[in-house]
Length: 306
Image (tube, rainbow, N blue to C red):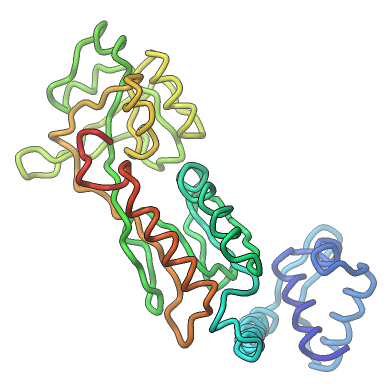
């Protein structure tokens, strides 16, 4: 077994945290994976993986070697792509990530169109509500809400979203429309733990930051559930403007306290900007940036129409 293949096996075991899962990923047998790791450890004269009957984790030497393997295999992929001409025409595998709801509403519908244009490209879309480490997880392009990028990455702003408080017209008729964020202390509120801030909301009052403590009657694990409750007229919620754009346009929800909203958050398309950028990344970034920047729900010039 050549050393590059051994590195690929080791990388799979480390990322999948198991021999059987690594074997499934590599489409091989668990015994062959076990033999490859054993041969690698014997040749290197050190233990890379600490194993018990219930767990597997990297040793200190294994962690260092994992980082070297990632770098070497990435350089090998880059060399092969250059030889195959993927820097001239889109070809190969693309991994992208985006927040769950944003990805479902805005990114996923565009993926098929891009793939139809470039039939030699395949895509893996990782839709998760966490900040993915692009280098560690092999992500080529990320869509992020907020100022979230690192050195060596380029970020293109394609729009922005607001943090909005909203309720159904029926709820506002029964309980009144709040004129100041302080009135939220008496409101019936449903919020999502996905927002990471469930005990207080930030606003701006006369140019100054204003923190309003809230006591939600109901906390759910997904934004969609909180939005659905608000649409039913049960209470108020606070989400990002794109998440309720369709409901606001349909008259199912109304935005309140917009004069007190904090500054909007940028939507950015982020990608690595070190060395040559493969054509599949360049074309996807261009395509995605153009389409998202044209979406009215993400365009700040449509502030009151969402």
